[in-house]
Image (cartoon, rainbow, N blue to C red):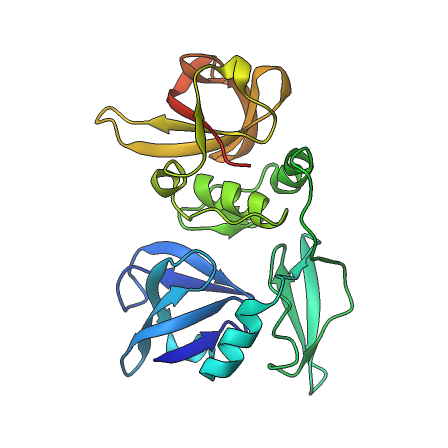
Length: 249
């Protein structure tokens, strides 16, 4: 088994081993993973944080030993706290990194960082404060950053920045936590899930106070939430059908 760490800012994780393939997620700076299969130019990996699998370009990560992988994975996760930050390598070259990049492997990569970081777990009310960092970020299928993010990437990163691990896709996140019977039982920070006509869960957002929800749909935006689903305040229509509300923490 081989292991790796992402030594670049935002690396695409694809469904097939080629550049035109669908973007299914992103590997952010400092993320750890196992290499499940290695080919000449691509590797199939499994991320340490959420066990998500996909293909990554061999030129876009650094191989590390099993010992290093296990040591870094055992540490409390330290994440960058600002929308964009800089790291510097041993040649004084600068790299940009996005909000939520992992900083535990700086020494392994001969990088230095003097910006703001997060390491402790925050209380649940802080989730909404964190969510506002992504407000108006454009929707991007597979995205996980303020420069492009999808609905479940948004919820996962908001939770991650507060010290909580949830899975990557909306359908996976819906398997976690405790279901609530009514919106009135929910608290800010709980997750609301929405299904399509076939009954498959395809969307997720974070519940706010006073029946509002923040979610990624076209962009990260705030809309109304009622028993039917999400009411888009700009289009004056319901856009998503409510399936279940979950208390994750």
